[in-house]
Length: 176
Image 1 (cartoon, rainbow, N blue to C red):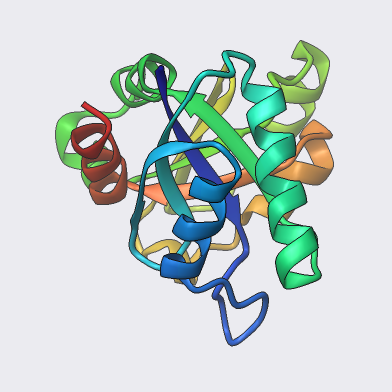
Image 2: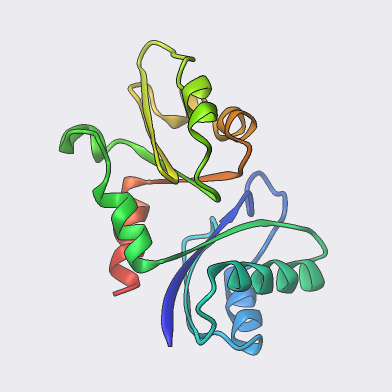
């Protein structure tokens, strides 16, 4: 069995796309996943699977949610080593890193798209696109940022889902 972390985008936000975590855990276990755990209501799932292909695990989770809840959800599945690499590769100082967000990308964008997206800047907002993650810091906080995942998704032609430093630390801990 291999351990994976699934990151669901846009569930349980503002009363939309409600997915109770206890129900999701049960659904995933009946779909063949083992040791299913969730962390907070924003769609973080740690599980074990015999399936080694992250894309196939994503497809199973998406289908389970669509069949049971009746709506589509973007799902990103990472291995623990992938998540640890993303966490460790943060280009920010430790102080800035603890206040930053990790916008994980489903696909590594092409270099020309990264170059084009990187031309846009806002005062007080720093980001760096490295491989399959956008490391993002906003002095005013994510909720006050001018940048958002939608901007980067359009520019980089892949979907993104963001997690803060504390969530990343907890997911790494739970997946050990």
